[in-house]
View 1 (tube, rainbow, N blue to C red):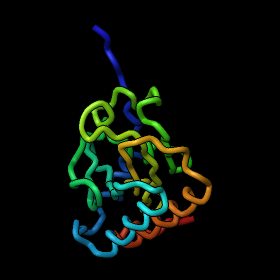
View 2 (view 1 turned 90 degrees about the vertical axis):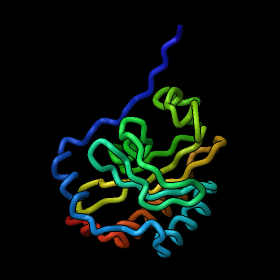
View 3 (view 1 turned 180 degrees about the vertical axis):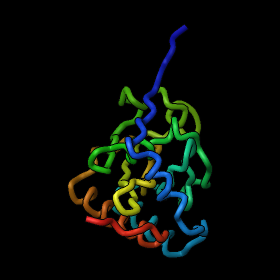
Length: 170
C-alpha cells in the first residue's frame, strides 16, 4: 500500500483578525452580474474555463461566485485558495497540480473535478487576506506571465471592492 499526502496551507498568524474581516463582509449574491463579469475577464486573462471567487471562512472555503463549475463549500484543508491566502505575495500559480508535490495527492486533483492548473490572487479586506480570485483548468498550462499576474491582482482588487471588503490601510 502506498500512502500519498498533500500539503494543507498554513494559517496566517493573525487568523483571528483575518476571520473578523470575513465575518464583517456583507451578504453576497451568487448571481451578482458584476462578479460574473469579473469572472469572465479572469477566464480570458488566465485562459481557463473555470473561475471563482472564494472566501476562506473558518475551516471551510466558500465559493461565493463561480463560472464553469457549480459553487460548493470545501474543507479549507484541500482548497488551493487557502494556499493563495497564505502566500507571502498573495499570488499562487501552479502550472501542473499533478506534478507539484504539495498538490499531487489532493482529492481535487486525483478525483473529481480532476483540476490540473490553478492560478489565484488574494482578495483582501484591509490588510487581511479573506479569499481569492482564481482560474482553474482540467489541463496543465505554462506558468502565469507577469501580465497575467498583474491583471489578476487588478481583478482581485475589483472583487474586493464589489463584495464590500474594507479598503487596505497603509
